[in-house]
Amino acid sequence: MIKAAIFDIDDTLFDLKSKRFIPSAITALKMLEEKGILVILATGRPPQTATAIREEGVNPTNIVCTNGHIILDKEGKIIDQKNVFFRLGTRCV
Image 1: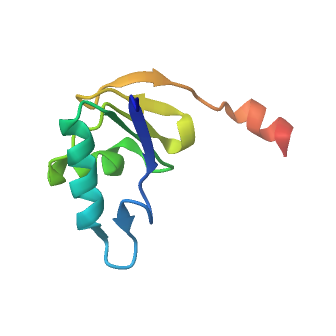
Image 2: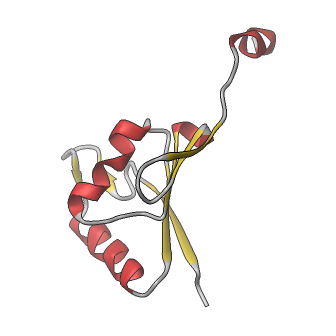
């Protein structure tokens, strides 16, 4: 039994050319939600744009934003946040 489904946003649920969510993808996400399957989004987008899917009537259980640095709950509140510190970044370069 499927308990959760995880999707990327850009070019999976959102068409970058038309700058719109793909209608069939929105329909599919709503069907998953209706069946009680957890919908989780994972994206490189920041929270401000990652949550735009809610305007389409989809309310993901969680959204993993900024390539895993921020995780939002169903209400859009930050439940986990990982910071990459400048010092670590300069050591990697």
